[in-house]
Amino acid sequence: MEDNKIDFFDNEFKQEDWNSYFNCFKDIVLDDNIPLELPEDVMKSLIGILGKESALKWINLGLKQFGGLSAIELSKNKKQLNALKAFIMRMPN
Image (cartoon, rainbow, N blue to C red; front, side, top):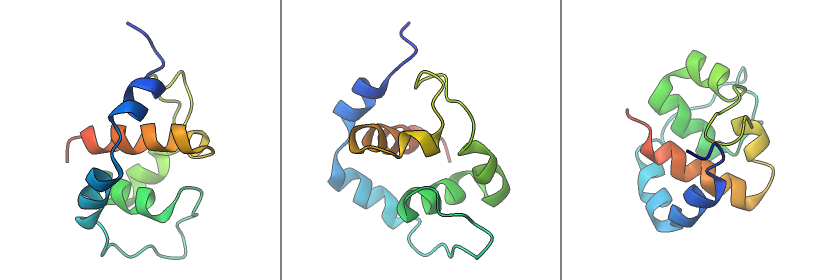
């Protein structure tokens, strides 16, 4: 199976789906100890799913599904960020 799923997840991404999904996490407050290396909506969603400590670790992990890129690295361009968001929406919570 192909390791890099950027195209797959990017093709699945729909902004309206993300908006609805993120609505569940919009009230999470990011404290000053949380570096905003990712867009705020992504960080709040990850904290809502994983908890603060786990989310802060997860964003730096190399993700097998994305050829070893981390969430922070994926956030550097729109296609990869959209793929990351589609992936996050599939994470169990």
